[in-house]
Length: 279
Image (cartoon, rainbow, N blue to C red; front, top):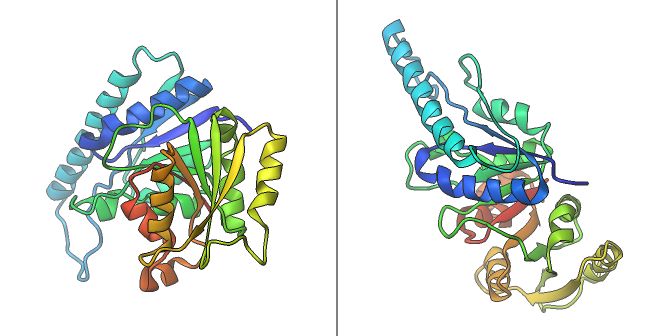
């Protein structure tokens, strides 16, 4: 598989440049077609009690949504005007209350979706930032770009979070176009004692398969820290200066991860390293 179509989901101007730098670097390296889009609703989220909005208020909301999209399109056009690849902006026509669905309608036809990490300090983040749902529901790999740190300009060293489950398997093989272009790939496993898995698919089997793709791969068995598996993985990826961390998203149900906490939620909220997520 090659990366030939990339969908970039933009939500606000302040974070657009960093996302565009990453998307343009990947599109240029792979010779991919870059599609930019933003999805806004002309109406606010449904409150507990129905509020009858006048036509004037609705028109003002629609105008604000169009202005927000126009501002993002302007940044997109500026970044891609002289790019060595084809770039286009897709307009979401009509009024949409299903923002996630509007993005996935485009994303399901792409090889890769790029989205920004949720910002807990942005008041519109809970409505407009939904990278986890894209990873869970789109059926496509999602590159999550951290809200802090430099843009992802090149991918030379990749870490793979591996537990042998379906989700991590999907992520590892969705990442093949990026792995083959990398200089080094490290497979990370986490167990209580830092030993190889006694059950399930061992990391050595994945390493052997990747080696047949001529991918330089090593395995690092990690002992889980007292804090969390997510912290263990992030620290290990930082220790080897990984440019990208590949992992499966939501091995448990989203409800269970929300209530009890989970690796996916912790990683998507806190990771300072770009994540490639697949479900």
